[in-house]
Length: 455
Image 1 (cartoon, one colour):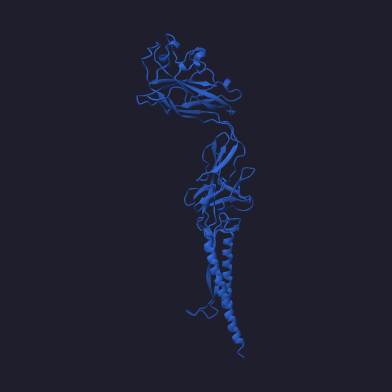
Image 2 (tube, rainbow, N blue to C red):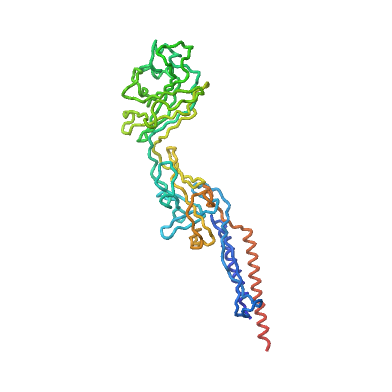
């Protein structure tokens, strides 16, 4: 008689209960993937030979422990570096000793050196290559430990200003509206001397801060003055020109650049004034006369002591001249002062963006996600980490949103995919199996006892 079948049944039921207990114990483990027991039967030809149809099994064995890599529920947290993957990918984590490992647990934090680490100290990896500020990191150079710069954002001098809006086509020039300010003749919309800031000498103005190479701010004021193309003051009720405007620039409240104090052009400051002309549809004609990207306006060095002169041009392509109120709809510039890191955020595409106290944002890195052709062949090593094996089918790291890797949800974590109700039911099933196999052993013991008593 043999107790092998019943004993093997006890063993596999016990191991199944171990697996179920492990699942239940990890119900609250972030990124945990539930396991299940794969049973296999066992036959031995030595019992009855190898005659077909007369083989008697000798019990069961645990064929494999399979993890279920289904998506877990996502739970919102208050930590911007809590990350969850909605897809099949794994975070790539580097260790100081040993190969990279992979995890679905996205609970990360910044250390004092700016590295993004797991709670147990491993570093999150991704794409981080030297790039132009504001440009998307590229995979050049392979995977690197992601490091957020601990130094502040350096100042960026202003090189471009954009102004868009509407200039009222019904407006008269300053000379047409107030001929008494200009006398009998004039050559410029702005009068000379100290009266240049008189609001009657121009039509509109708008201001914006610009920054030099030291991050110091300077106020740029742009004056829009409609032009009358004659040196004779016309009657105030006659509009001789509908489409031409001059734009002058003042720095920190000083006299406009490109002009002498008498209002005449300053030969020492050429290319300081823009001339806007509009067509019959009210849109600005291009190219616009005046400073350009290739030949920008250069603010004299006396306005920026200790710093490089500000060199910038203005993009007026979104200006128009139609009947209606004066309106500025766009007023931006590309410079900024220095700033310290205020926070970090991660987008759905895995791009890590730094936010600075000067209001700037900068794309610093991009997470890498790893996929496997056979994730069940991964080797579990604890701490919610897996190692790749020859059977797992390691692929090239990809970016979030590419292929089946999935997208990244920031401020969220992936719950364990353990179905507690199912686990409790399976616990009852395996308990019954264990009891049944124990009964099998008990029955064989009783049969053996009967044979022993036959004397």
